[in-house]
Image (cartoon, rainbow, N blue to C red; front, side, top):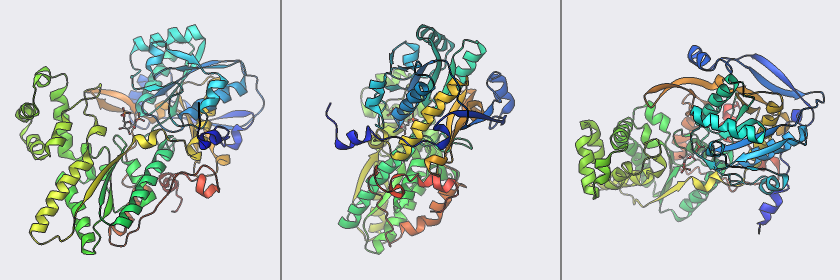
Length: 550
Ligand code: FBP
């Protein structure tokens, strides 16, 4: 297969690893752990995997480990670096015992349930080193949560002699990994389960997991694109760019991109929810910046919009929840033929408050809210074009202001959505190194008989040499939350903390970025080769959260 010069060069890149992992490793066990909340409930639900100690890896003596067969699963949306977790796991297992084998379950968790797998040999793994994508074995969103699925997993693991499964996924997939680990431990069936923190959304992090992999690369790709757009805007001086950024629920991606590129406006969903803002208030906020800049003769700018925004506006959240309940498997609705009939039907069933929100929405957006649901019956936020909704509402408001002689500018807007552009990019050095280390850490946890742990790497703002790898009991990250009407143990999702350093930095600077003295930064493309201060920088979020000054 023909490859680009960069692909060829990256195939020989050797990921950097912490000093402690380059040689024989010993495990340092910390004190017993507690879950972040609801300790009694979590302890009762996970009697066999609760309270285990934190593990850190240190330099140790040579140990002869028996060969072990391991299965690996990629779960959920793609994130740059997944292939390097697999490469690190493969190399780690082989280094500890060359007879060990790695199997990949195909197409996500369903591969384990349906017994679809392949053995990952050196030739296969070598093809995928330092590449983006999850195509080595594919991914999927099947939820691994039912005992019959777990039992089916036991059958294939017995057949292949698999003693451990590594699940590379987000908060939900790692929650399921934890349930699976507990189930297998309780049945004493000799199958360990280890998780790895993946998601571009950056919302799987906590006191022990500093960041999920993929966030770094994805944000750098989007920031490059935003910077390019800003340079164009500053050259042509004629468009307002409304840019929606992926990140299903949390606004970490939008915030990080704002820190990297300093746009005129960045909306943060968590702030919208906290201040209980309405759609009209958000529009007012945007309009006021546009009017101010127009007064200085600047009829252009950039606005970042997090993908999940709509669900954080309280009135919209209520409307979406009513629509989710109303439209889940609703044959009457599905039988209606025209958009108008559907609109009337929906209006007739909503509460008065939601009806008025629904009625005021542009028709196209109202329609998007009633279109295809995900397998759980929820509206698919990534398909809602919030950027277009805002353009339409802002244009209307500006037209009124113009008619009243308050606004004298010219408003021409363009819309963008950046998501899939960054999910499979060639991993940055940070993600390539971080993921390779995570894979190696998973291998060490496995040969040491651990289960119910997530591989972890800390100290990530330091050079890779000084990173500290180990394992964190997944139960430690859990709390009880209501899901589909029932209280369930789940890993706590990390939304943007409005008291955290990244938001505080943004809050302190946003007025300056919004005003007439354009403060744009142009980050440029990810650099894979060159000086370390250009190639190995972690995200601004990670730096600020670690106390590094920008
Ligand atoms: P994960 O949470 O599985 O990592 O996926 C994140 C994400 O990229 C979101 O940002 C986005 O909303 C969603 O996946 C899109 O999903 P799909 O790939 O099904 O279009």
